[in-house]
Every structure is written in structure tokens, then in C-alpha cells.
Length: 195
Image (tube, rainbow, N blue to C red):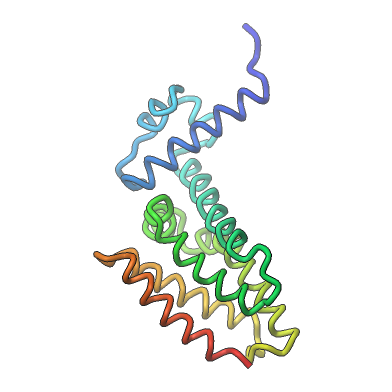
């Protein structure tokens, strides 16, 4: 029997990841068994374990993919903006909207910290949206446009504020209205660091 090609193996891993991502986003990690993920993409349970090692390993891969997608939304929102302050505002707004969206909210805000633990959750956040926040704040600080003497501390505080705002929005019965309210409050907060 011929061995599967690398392309077939990668396609299988991608199909598993996509199926798990959809199921976790819809129902949450605790409510989804590995067998359901396997059935959703037409593979065996063993194939899931072969590609991701464990149920937790599969969730970690889904979480990393979703946080990367949130980062990609921020990059799309800021692409072509030459003014770093406009980039800061557009990126913060894009983060809030992306992280409370139906395909991200459960994975990132609810299950991420609980399943992965705080340290790993922060690593994924730092690798995607956190990195972008650090970069734009450093650019603004270098240009003398923010009063932040310590960019990493300012980034941590803004990130914390945005994550808490996202949790608040996600729990709201009217997420669109809550998102607008959170953005208005965050925008006032950002003005406080502007030089």
C-alpha cells in the first residue's frame, strides 16, 4: 500500500483543524469529542491523534489558528494606513470586533484561558495581536506621539483593557451595541496616552 503524500497529509491535518475550529466555536471545547471532529471531516480518531497528538493538542492548534486570524484582521484593518495613530485606533477596533465574532469568541475568550492556561493563552495573544500593538506603540513612542515612557507596560495595560472589554461585549445580549460602547470608551482611554 503506498504511503500518503505530504500534500495529502497536510490536507488531512487542515481538514481536521477546520472541523475542530467550527465545532469548538459553535459548542465549546468541553462539548466536543475527538470522535465528532474525526467524523466531521471523514477521518479516523487515530488520524486526529496522529496529526495533533491529543485532544488538548488539537485545541492548542485551533486556538493558535484563531488568534492568528484575529491578528490578520488587525493587519487588514491597518493595511495602507500611513499614520501610526490611525493604525493604533483601527487595529484596536479591529481586535475588539474580531475577537468577539462568532468564529473566535468561544475559542479565544472562553476556552482558551481555561484549556491552555494563562501563560500559553498569553503567548498566542502576544504572537498575533499583541505583537502588532507593541509595534505601533513603539512607532508612536519613537515619534514622540505618545506619553508612554514604557511601551511594554503600556501595551500590557491596553491589551488587558481590550481583553476585558471583549469579555464584556461577548457576554452582552446586544453585542453590536456593547461593541460600540466598548470602542467609545477605549478610544477615550487611548486619547489619554496621546502626546
